[in-house]
Length: 349
Ligand SMILES: *[C@@H]1O[C@H](CO)[C@@H](O)[C@H](O)[C@H]1NC(C)=O
Ligand SMILES: *[C@@H]1O[C@H](CO)[C@@H](O)[C@H](O)[C@H]1NC(C)=O
Ligand SMILES: *[C@@H]1O[C@H](CO)[C@@H](O)[C@H](O)[C@H]1NC(C)=O
Ligand SMILES: *[C@@H]1O[C@H](CO)[C@@H](O)[C@H](O)[C@H]1NC(C)=O
Image (cartoon, rainbow, N blue to C red; front, side):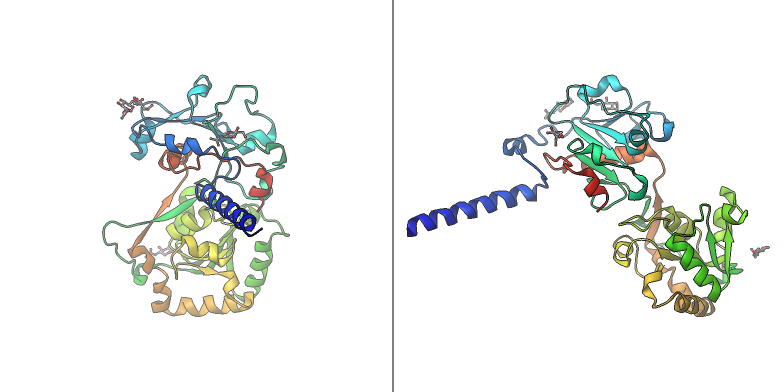
């Protein structure tokens, strides 16, 4: 009896250890343990990334060794020639075209066990459509989310190699307290409510299609730079959904971002402290307005919102080729085996 108990205890322990080990490798479903040993047998081998079709139908030049020539990423062959399907390590599918039905998954083609299919989307969940049809198909995700297999943020901060310099406030030419650029205004958006409450407390200068006051791309940043604060309000409030409104408009436009989007912790994970103001940090929008007004008058405290620029520089991601080449950097640390058995649940979580 005692022996039996001990034995089952050992079994359970072993099972747990085994499972833990599998989990450590990041597998979501069944894993073939022997495959672990075959990893990286030839590290100088090219990884082939096949883009099945171009997002939004806009193609880029892939001549030469693009990943190396443009981004100094070695051993990475980026192709869009479908005849290379069988030799591709990763096949990438952009969600929008699949959802719209103008592109289809090559489900009839024989698919090797080691080939990974990647689901790529930079949209917030509400714009991804019904993903339930894609259960048990994809092996990896490429999205702006940090917990994607390959994270493809809209931008990020990179450490500066050489010591930077501060932009002195004296050189700043600010004429508006708060600015907002909005094209697709929708009353039900949280950002629209916050805007109207804020506008009741402090003056907010509004640009963009909504007010028939659009800025050309060359006017955008110079205009924002004349504002103390820029409302980097996302249209969707979803995990990690932080767009160029922060990275480009605010950070590059030299206005302090007031952000509305994912929770404060998501911003803190990617942006330095004292580089932005989160709407949630205030009990009320009125308090936020008061804070902005006081800050704009306090040159020293206002300037502290720019000290991050001494250490960090903004990197924007706009070219699909760069996002795709970056798959290669992480290729060797991808889980051996992974299947998104419920992509819809993942994408909406
Ligand atoms: C790795 O592959 C490259 C190109 O296919 C080849 O030139 C090289 O000899 C291989 N190295 C090893 C260690 O197998
Ligand atoms: C790897 O891919 C690049 C880009 O397509 C190509 O120029 C290079 O010859 C390839 N190297 C090997 C070892 O296959
Ligand atoms: C400051 O901005 C205004 C427009 O808001 C512009 O007319 C003026 O020339 C600027 N001054 C400097 C010193 O850049
Ligand atoms: C990718 O997903 C397919 C379909 O579920 C699966 O058969 C295959 O083993 C997976 N491959 C990897 C490398 O995870």
